[in-house]
Length: 75
Image 1 (tube, rainbow, N blue to C red):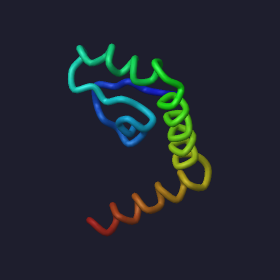
Image 2: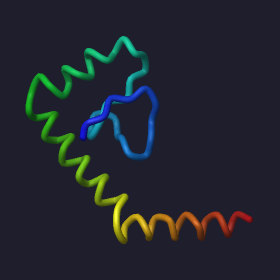
Image 3: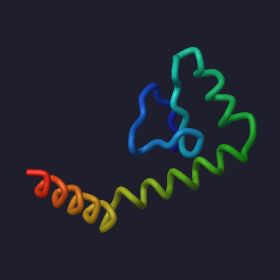
């Protein structure tokens, strides 16, 4: 699940599971990064699986619980 985005997010890490464009003219460069060799494609797949694990099931619940605790302590 490789992503090519114009904006950053917590779900995509540049050159790991995605490519963050600084300008739309970089789209071709980003496509070549993932499609020219299987190395980048496979690395991105592994990082995507890690991101999915971090944001599902108990990991996701724990992340939300930490966020809620931080929000409470800031009030």
